[in-house]
Length: 413
Image (tube, rainbow, N blue to C red):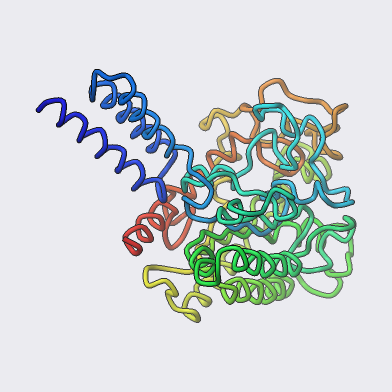
C-alpha cells in the first residue's frame, strides 16, 4: 500500500510539473523537478521504474518546442539576438568579446556579455530560447516557440539609424511577422497559427535610438531643426501608435512596450558630455518627457481595443528608466562597483567606439551595470527581467508578468 501511495504521489508530481510548464518561472520548475526526483527515489525498489520517473520529472523543466507559450520580440539592439549577423551592416555583435560569458564563450549577435533581457524573460515564461527570424533554423516546430524580429540600430522612425546600412526597420519587422504567420499556418493550419499568435507574449523595445541616433545624433540635426523636443516626442509617439495598432491587428494580444531608459547616463553619452560621470541633462530630459506620454498613449490604445483577451490590458508599459535609475543612484546596493564606466570599450568611461578584441575589458562583468557603451551586462539584465516578473506598478503597469501569466493560465484552464 505504501508503495502504491508513493508511486501515485510521484506521478501526481509529474502532472504538476507539466501543468506549470506553460506559465511559471524556471526556478519553480526546478524546485518541482527536485521534489519529484526525491519521490521517485522512494517510489519503487525497481531501479528501472525509479529512473523512468526521474526522467519524466526532469524533462519538463526543459520545455519542448511548441509546449510553452510563444514569444515574439520586436525592436532594437537591446533585444536583438542575432538577426543582424545575417546582414551586411556595421551594427553587429558577432565577434569576441561579445558573448564572453556564454557557455561556449562565443558571440551570438546579442549586444551583451551573455544573455539579454528577452532571453531571461523566455526562461521566466518556461520557453526555450527564441530564434532570430533570419536564422535558417527557424522552421518546423521551432516556429511554434515564436520568433525574434529585432534589429540593432533601428527606431520608431525610418530615418533613425541611417548611419547603419541594411538594418531591419520596424516596418520590415512587421512584414516579417506577417510572413511568419503564413509559414506557421501553412505547416500547422490557420486555426492553430491563430492560437499560437493570440496566446503569445509579445515585447517591443523602441525609442532610444530615435533620440541618440536621430534627434541628438549631431548638433542641429535635421529632426531637431524640424521639431522642438516636445513636438518631436508627440510625433514619434503618433508613429509608434500606428506600429502598435498593426501588431495588435496581426493578432498579438499581450504586448509589453518598454519605455526609453536613462539615455543621458550611458557611457557613450558620458564620454562626450560629462566631466565627472553626471548624466547629460538634455538627454535625461528627453526620456523624462517621453515615458509618461508613452504610458498615456498605451492607456488610450487599451481603451480603444478593449481588453481583447477577456482578462486585463493588451498593452503593458514597462518603465526601464526606473530600473536603471535604481542602479545608477546606488550601484553598490545592487552589488555593482560602477554604473558609469562600461566593462568593454575605450576612452573616457570606456564609452568611445564599439567593444572589440582590442578594447579595454573588465575582469568581472558582474560588477558593471554597462557591458559596452550603450548596453547592460547580463547581470543588470537579470535584475531588469525580475522587475518585469514581480515589479510594482512603478516598474510595469498596469500589471507585472507574474500577474499576466497567472491570469492567462486561468483564462485558458
